[in-house]
Structure formats: C-alpha cells, structure tokens
Length: 233
Ligand SMILES: [Zn+2]
Image 1 (tube, rainbow, N blue to C red):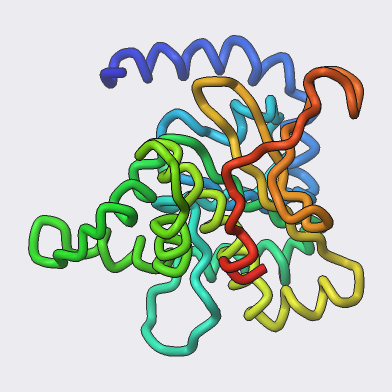
Image 2: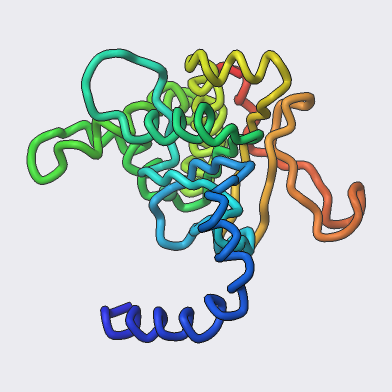
C-alpha cells in the first residue's frame, strides 16, 4: 500500500469512523484510556489485532514485536520495549488480561526454526531476538511426522506457551495472577483458515474457537502440538 493510499485511508477514517465514534473518542480523550486487555502480537502485517478482533479505539493496549515473544524478566541492558509496555499496561493501566497472540506462517518463528544464527549485518538484531524461542524450537524439531509449515506453526504455539511462562517471571504479573486480578491467555490465529484457537491449560493444547455453539461442529480440538508439555507450561 503506497503512501497516497494511506493518505486516502486517513481521509476515509476522518469522514467515517472518526465522526461516527465522536462520543467514544471524546470520552477516551477526556477520561484517558482504560483498556482491559494487553495484547502481545506479531509485527506481521496480516495479523493486526484491532482488525482481527473488530476493536474500537481504546479497547486493547497492543505491543507488537517479531514473533510475539515475551522475554523473561531481567535487569541487564537498557532497552526493553516489550517489558516496558508490559509494565505500563499491568502496573499503570491495570489491565485484567494479557493475551499472547501467535499466528500461522510466522516469519520470525520461521527464522528461529531455520536457526538463522548469524548476527552480522544486515541481520544483527533479528537472530538474537527470535533466539528467545530456542526452547520451543528444540521441542518442535523433535516432533515427528510434520511438514515444514506445520512444524513452524507448532513452534509458534510452543513459543506462546514459553512467553506465558516468561510473563510469570515479572513480579508485577505474578503477584496479580496469584491474587486473581490478572489472567494470562495464549491464542493462535490461522491466517489462511480464519480460525482462532485458544490454549486450554486444562487439556494442554490449543482448542479452536467454534463458529457455532461450544461443542458443536465448529468446536473441535487441535492436534499437532503433541509435545507442548516439554515447552515448560
Ligand atoms: Zn509473526
């Protein structure tokens, strides 16, 4: 989408939703944002959370990074963008839910699976970042009988579980979860199928959100993440 089309889109927004949602926009600018959900999503242009979940302005607080990874808490270094967004959402905004949203065909997870470990220019930072998911990669590589694309998707789901575990290394998150003030969720969207699945910790796998009633034809379990326990959740 070239720049003139973005400008045209802005004009459509100004003449459309901006006017239609005048009351909402007045309220969230007057009272400040009060989102109840922090969503940690991938930078991928196909998985914009606000579009996928049909959100209005102010609905969700979003941080996007390559492969929607959450690093563990650490005190070294100075630049922790995802950790800063997490801290702000949890401590300042007081969100009630944190969703780690993974997706199919993730290029970041693909790089992780390929083991693109070179950190020489022009790819200095990406390999280091996706290496956060190394534990998920190891488990996904050990799974048998998968096509390459399915193996990458498996790694994505395992990485979601790893990120959920890393979330709990942040004291502010862990305290609120243990007090019942914060819930953590792992979701995976299949871009091509238009299907959303949610991690069910009770059964240890991702279960699609059915289009019909729960338990109906559209509500079936997902195979293919048969080794998630080893991913640490
Ligand atoms: Zn991605």
